[in-house]
Length: 171
Image (tube, rainbow, N blue to C red; front, side, top):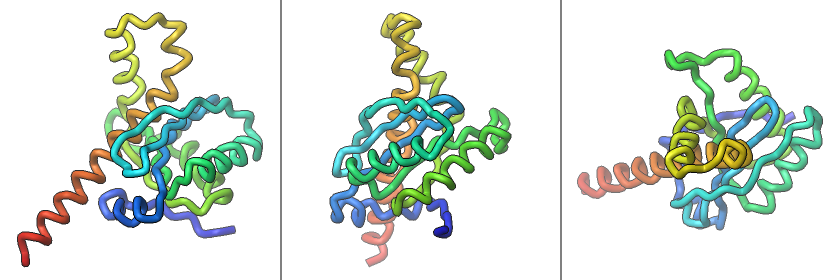
């Protein structure tokens, strides 16, 4: 078994990932489904891939590992479901166990992203777009994965810009 490590997003080198032709994947991990999103090859924009129904077997991880390989992902960003008070709860333990098991199927790096209001935010947008409840139910997990991934991408790009700007000012 390989050692499992969660990367710090602030230290992620997007230039290294993009130079290698890799993407980032976002996961919204639930008890019954996993929403999946992927970045473009410049790791600037997130788009939805789909939703996987969990069966509770190794097949879940094999399917995701196949997607990770096909999408050329070097970084997997998973939603970290903190409680509203900011503390990890029981759901965080479930997500961490899922991610730990998934790490046995891939060599990609893993990083977590606070997903506290992702489902609520995407539901609000879909309600404002006058989308029916039935249609929302079909795309909520995928949209939440996009929301999680885009938030992390924006953070990493901003952090990378600040690092580049700071080092340029020191010369």
